[in-house]
Image (tube, helix red, strand yellow):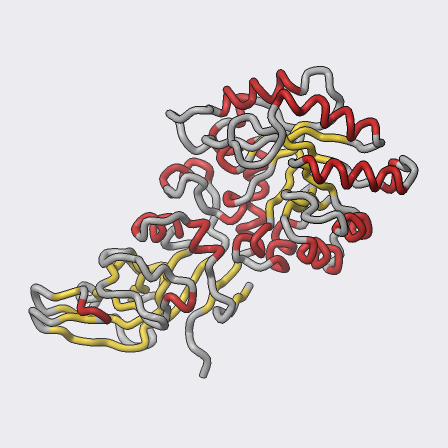
Length: 370
């Protein structure tokens, strides 16, 4: 019999979240970000759930090829562009659009244009990235004009993009307003679409600017850019991944006993412990503390369940949960580690991380259904 842990990927929830993006930013096209194997959900599942998108954005040419092999004929955007000059040939074969953010990429693209004698129909479309304060990738505004004209003179169609550093914060600089103002001043008079908004900007700042293309990522999967579920409750997003398992053992502990490696958790009173088939080898955070929420099914199933609390160190294949207040629980009772009943952000926040990390870290050994 197979181990009971599995991740259910809900394509309908993904479709719902994409429609919520469209409702928040009507008039904008959507680059659905599917990097990191669609944030751990699997590229094939993301393709099924997001195939009504306007385009897919990712990092890896291998993933771009997978999308083409699955039948996607629309735009694909390489968010970090070319990593070497040799990438150009596969980029052309796969008909990908490229982000350009450093001078070597400009040189390579100029060389490609010269080799093709400026035949623009055979050149990739460029998303020229401006560093407006994120200070990660992109050209500073005083460099941007020269780079734009170099690529334009080489026959490339150019769109303009930047990335917000603090769209999920209200009191940090540079703000969304500051970065957007820098961006629009620098591209004034230039032709080309604009691509500005990540998930946080779509959720909380869409009224401040217009973007021809938005680039939502984490919100498509039903999790919060800020790491706090309460920040996205208003958006009515749906959890896409539900990580489920079962109780595989029960222990009755007396007062002053302990459970797990290191005997971290010690009892004050007699308690009942449920052993769940899930551990750090499945992608569950090893550093999760006592008290981390775990959803345990009620007498009528998961929908009838409630939050219980982890008690003891996460091990490779198991966690231990205090089920004292749920006398019906026995071996075989269903458990949800995160998902539609327990937001991944709540688990991540307890563990001192963010939902992104938990979703992306789901181990290959965990079967995915859906």
